Figure 1 (cartoon, helix red, strand yellow):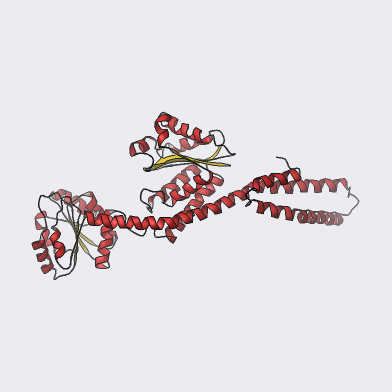
Figure 2: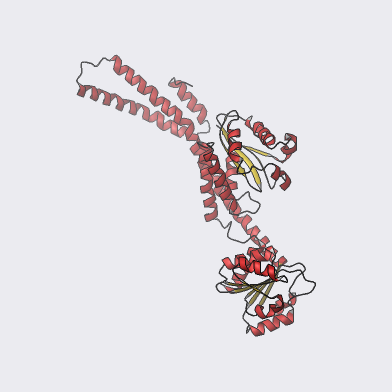
Length: 420
């Protein structure tokens, strides 16, 4: 059997190329059946996400020529010249194709190593291919095993334990300052997407109250409703800021909205209780001098990006352990795969000897024996056959792991005169 993978991803192709070659979920079943109809293809799965498009197949024999066929299919299906897309494609065969599958499911090949979305996308692609009837054998087993690999990587490494988005990095820092976010109040200044994401992460982390202030009150009310919070007048920022433990600011402003003097007033009103300020505006909304005041902790976009970069580096270190896990599981799968090569020979050998046994019993003309005697002879010959078969079957199974296992299995077939 031959495994083949043709695809492109965020490393090999820009977004405009990936968009042209993407498979919509509605058209994917038809595309799966079209690939399955190609000569020699016995199993196929298509994985199509915003960051990658990959076609993974299994053919019956050692059919290296299936690679150009898959490339041609991808070009023809999307009505693109092959010369246009070929420079962006990668082609992997056999163990490299399966190893790539394991790495993809485990997010070791993702743009952000350790992200969780890709596993769900692979599972959806697997379900879709099964529903289309294009998975039913060793490739199906490989994909199922990739889910186990992903679970091992996630539980045995710290690949997903640190924040790698600016908005979530803010939550990490807030937890370090407060210990717990339970019952912490948030003031959102501005209604931008990044500040909204940071607020959502903080709410998920345990914060329970949120105020939203925006120059346009209607937008503040809309966002407050989405976050189950309360819109407040922009002119009353300081009044509500004093009630809050966390301030997230992201508005367009020529001057600082909060300066050092306002920071001192806030501390006085809060009786020096700590306050966490996240300034993700460019230009900045909060005077950096505030950081010189005790119990005011200010972080801007660059500070948060440094946290993200440090966490990304930590994930890369953890990913090296994840690669080892993927390689271990790959070897297990390949060992299992090799056992499939000897199963037909074992079945043929058993069938061949059983046929000889029955022929010899018929030739012996045991009609004069009683029913009980015939059963005894049948039991005796079966027992002899099983004893004769045991050593060769045992050795056949061990041959599956031998480097020259295929050649040795062929020799066994010749010795016993089994059909090739």
